Amino acid sequence: MGDVLEEIARADGGAVAYPIVVGTNAHGVRGAFATRDVAKGETVLERGLDGANAVMDDPREDARWSRQLGRRLIRLTRDVSSLSSLMRAYVECLPKERETIGLANDEASVEALRATWDDKNAKEEMLTFAKQIESSFALESAMDDTLTMDEWRWAMAMVHSRTFRIEDEYGRRPTRRAMIPGADLLNHSSVDANCDWSSNGETFVISAVRDIKAGEEFTLSYGSQCDRHFMLFYGFVPEPNPHNKVRLFSDGKHALDWYQALCGVDELDDVWDREKKRIVATFEKKYCVYRPDKNGLRRCVAPDGLFLGAQGVVDEALIMLLNEMSGDEDMAIAAIRARAAEVIDFMESTTDRIEQALRDRKVSPYNVSLMKTFRERKVALLRHVA
Image (cartoon, rainbow, N blue to C red; front, side, top):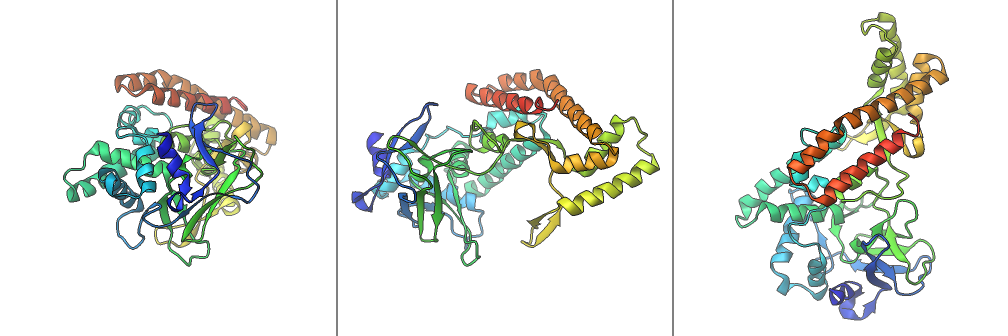
């Protein structure tokens, strides 16, 4: 394996050696480390965006990008002898078949949590992904009767945890997805990534964003995502994660309906109903965000939830809603504390059922531990204000 990984850190038939060596970090995770001091702005790794140096989709094809990459990856694993030395080394260093990464990629975890998970949004995201795996397998297996679900699930796990989205901010080139040998050896950092990547559509380059000492681990940011995203699709939760958050309410109406019930006011009260509508309209106008619709047109839509952020930072929009409704900031804060405590109580009431379902489905010890960590971190975040 050492020779295989060394091949990935080279290019141009071995003529170019990048300052990378593969090792294990303090958490026992494989990563990429500097073989020498690297200056800010220096290239750490460069690859051509072609079939000899990357696994890429083709935007001209009708199939979704993940299907294309999964199909190409499986073809590579089935015909290793015909590959370039770089791509052969890349395929050989990938986690082996039947290993899945992330709870959303693991059939046993999905079935265990389908009826028991108390996180509605996380469950919906997980089940949507599981359905995509099943439907894409049906399409691919119709074209390849030797394809197995285990093989396809493995390919999807690789694709969704190792793919870079390459787009042109000016829209001159179509967006593409690529799996880059060597680039996916860099682990994630939420707070101190020392590298970043760029692409002109023809090459993919990782560069140092600060001076890096010999022996230091190279890291990238996989995105400003909460714990849920990392757990579902990458199979870990970053520590620390300043982007972690807990959804307290789905939208403004949900928050004010809950507050009305907290205050013991009849749900048919006309005065409260008119005031709620006024406040929600103000909220949506002030905090709307622009997102593309199914036709690619940007539309102004309300935020997709009201959250408690890392270190107990309360969503400004939530404070505004409850402050307007109560007329008193102290009462608004007290309501948020009550909501956090309510969510904790609900989570604690469902813990035994979730753990039993994971045992019944014989979910791997790693994924059981991952779910436990995810829930403990969620409760710890809520306790900042509860």
